[in-house]
Picture (tube, rainbow, N blue to C red):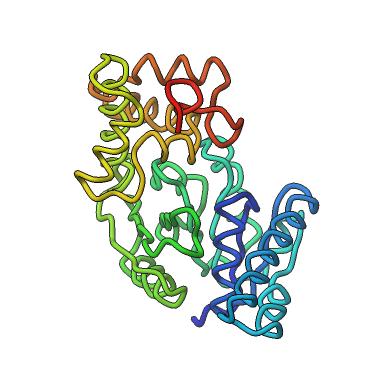
Length: 287
C-alpha cells in the first residue's frame, strides 16, 4: 500500500524534526501532541528553519510555505485514524510508549505499520500492547532528523520481513540511509556504542585522568568525531544519558553498565546540560 500520509506522535525536538522531514519529502503529516500549543511551537520552529533555507537560496518562498501546509496540527490521537504509517516520538519512558501504542492500535487501520523512534527500548515489549506485533517496528532517527542521515530500523521478535522492508523503503523516501538491526537488543547499534564511550569518558573525568576539555579534544582529533562525549552529553541531556545507562544496566545485568557517580551527581544537582543551560563544561571546565 502506498504511504501518502504519516502520523507523528510527539512534537518535541525529535517528533517535530521527523514531521518536518516528512513534509519536506512531500508527505502529508498529522502531527499530534498533548496540547495544540506544543504543536504550534514546533511548526513555528520549522518555519524559522525554512526561512533560513529561503535566505540561502536552497528553496523558494512558495516551496517553504508548501512544506508547512502539508502538516495538520492536532492534540487528538483519533485524528491519526486515516494515516498510512505512524511514527511515535514521545518521551523515552516505557509506560508512556505502551499507553500510546495501545491507543494507536485501536484507532488506526489494522493494516498499517506502527513505528517507534525509541533510542534504546524493547520493540518487542512495546509491540505486546497491540494486536499487530508483526507490524510494530523500531524507526530510530537521530537529532536533528532533518540533517542526520541515519535511521536504525529495528526488528521486534515478531516484526515481519514485509514490515522491515516497507520501513526501510520509507526511510529512503525520506532521503535517509537505513540500517537493519536484526535483534531487538537494548540500545541497538549507535547507542550501544555511544553509551560505552560516555561511561568511559565519565570515568576518566571521575578518576582525574584528564579534563573535560582534553577528553573531548582527544576524541574529536583522535577518533575524528564531530564533537566530544561531554559536548554531546550536554547537548542530548544528562538525564537522558543516565536513563539509558540505567536501562542497559537493568537489561544486561552487567556491571560495566553501572552509571558513573559523576553523572549521577550531576543529574541529582539538576545540571542536565542544554535543558538547564548548565552541564559538564559549566561545572568542570571552561569552554
